[in-house]
Length: 399
Image (cartoon, rainbow, N blue to C red; front, side):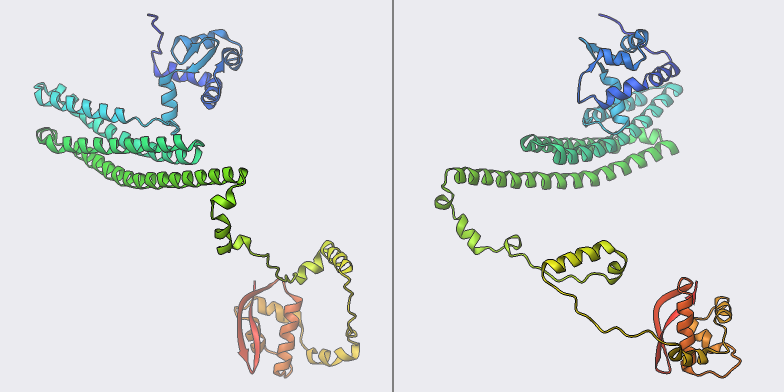
């Protein structure tokens, strides 16, 4: 039997894995797609055969003919750390429980204080490991359940995978009960090993088990839903295949009541299409010449003609004279600057402003409109309105 070399320090191991991370990353990403050719592996280590040989000799890679693959221990480690493993390691939890029983027995039989403390610390570490692996298995179970339902194309295999995951869920629950029973029955050990660290570890593990129980209940419920959905989809698939066969044999009208069912039902997708009038945005028509061009072509094609409308003539200087006289004696810029420094809304400020001449409500309304037109970007519209002497105005503040 050939004995493989092995790494003697953590530093040696991490340096080797770091140096060959390009090869290991490529092989890990393609682990399910292809058998990795040895020639390609050699290229990824820079053509250095010694570096590739070291990975093979130290058991990081395994050679199979002209291909190489990541050794199972390293592959399982990478998948577990990266949370992409498909295997639910129920046996690892069972091994922890068995080892836990053994070390509790060693502790109770040991008379040497130092060795007794060693067994006590080992039990504490095993309890933490049991709780952690149980939660890890539950997380893996949930991920694999969703992947099996959403990714597996073969409905028979999909259903079988879900049933197997359901069995593993029951196995995890059984192991939780076994560990809880062990912690309850070993009163002698936990009384003799009563220290703050052990008490906290026991409390944390019990909390992990409660959390795992709740998650497993939800997983069981979801598995049942998935399996029922698969059954419904399978029945529908069989019915469609049977209808397809009858259609091909020209027997669908004589051997089924399909025509009668279609006559009695009137689903929405079989109704005639409803057309609704759409009013185009005026702003879009003003800004988009392409839309206007399209509308003109549609109008010409449908024989629509533009209806001439009488346009109002522009205002003359005489029309504006009265308005100019009203605003005479008021500097809009001066009023706006004072308003910007105040905390009032615009209309209240105009009412409170100290004018040199007497003004009526129409003068105030005209000044209000003028200031809004002159400073649209500096106005903060609140969307609220108020009323003063039968005049409704928007509440506007300066930005």
